[in-house]
Image (cartoon, rainbow, N blue to C red):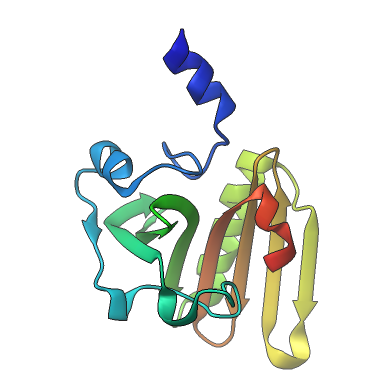
Length: 159
């Protein structure tokens, strides 16, 4: 019963993860994941201004996970050894079709996006789903970059 109560108390994350999981726990679920060297870790000082040089930020990558018809590398971002962000990135000349495919899959899973933004003048489109515990943001930056980011609900301000 304790384990069930702990799982219910935790917020859901991406896939089989939940927010706050340790790198070791996520590796047990996704044994193909591997740690990424600090110099290659995805750390945006705009997201973490209090953490210069990615202090306390680590990353694991799950390679070649299939989402829809394509494979992606899934980047699990940890802050102080707790899962704090999931970042999926694809650079391709097929960015528009990738964005459309992911948006359809996410709409099937979560319903219509809470927010749709289009800034055609600078080539940016985004859709945001606001689920109970997680914010999901899909963005295309033309001509060739697509980002899919999962964040715990309390990070809503950082979108």
